[in-house]
Image 1 (tube, rainbow, N blue to C red):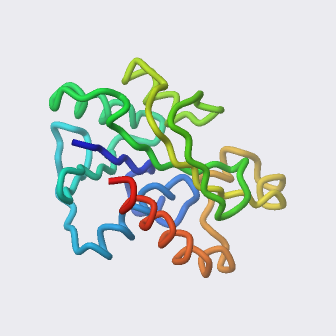
Image 2: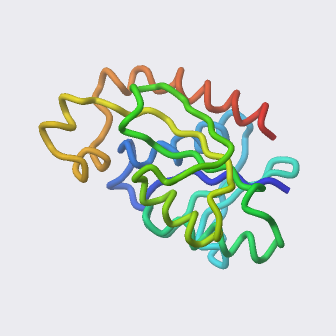
Amino acid sequence: MKVIIGFGNPGTQYNWTRHNTGFLALDFYAKVHQLEWKDTPKFFCQSTKNNDTLFVKATTYYNEVGRAARAIMNFYKLQPSDFLVICDDFNLDFGKLRFREKGSAGGNNGLKSCITELGSDNFPRLRVGTANDALRKQVGDVDFVLSKYTPEEKEKLPKILGEIADFIAKYQ
């Protein structure tokens, strides 16, 4: 079994924010594959399944996503390497995808949470570039990751989310 966790924050106020890029990616994939999300409180998430892959959107906040990962890992007796996380990265050019088999958190609090809760940094991650240097300088890092995509960026999102969906399909 594989588990794909998209990072984000619960609540409609976070829809279309940079920090919810992982949620956007999984929602896009689920729509294309006609998958339905269900509440899964014992894993602190909403989940859906496709073949032998569990898709997860944690209902904890972004910085505590590792709680959901650990609950799933313990229940299914998985290894950290069975997980793929999809998260935003404001240090990557907007729309650029970067895949790594393992590595540090690189300042991402969601990744820090997963590393702590899984007890390892040995899990794959797909980082999605959300950089907008002008906006980031204007509002600062905390407000930037919680900012909504600009109209110009939103126009480009379907293509980017399609690329992520293709990646997921090949990854499974």
